[in-house]
Length: 102
Ligand SMILES: [Zn+2]
Figure (cartoon, rainbow, N blue to C red):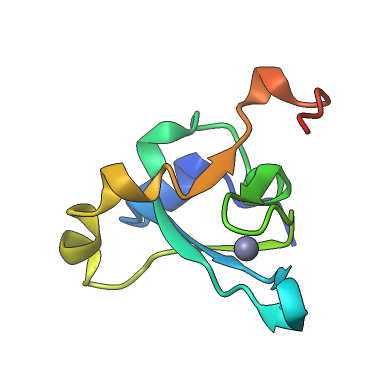
């Protein structure tokens, strides 16, 4: 499969990415933390895979995020929580790639 870039998602009307955490919390409970990331946060040539690998859950600290484009018509509802949601997931920016934190 060719890499899905932010630019191509944008052309398809996607305005945000949904992130689900596949990590585990204490006691082996699934984390299930989720957030919506506004697509404007990323540059148009970045691909979904790359971003996915850079997502780290701020709830459990795992880097097992499942990232998918939001094709739903519910985006207007999510949009209201955008500002709060971006703080739920710590997405490393491109220039920080390779620099490990914690
Ligand atoms: Zn988590």
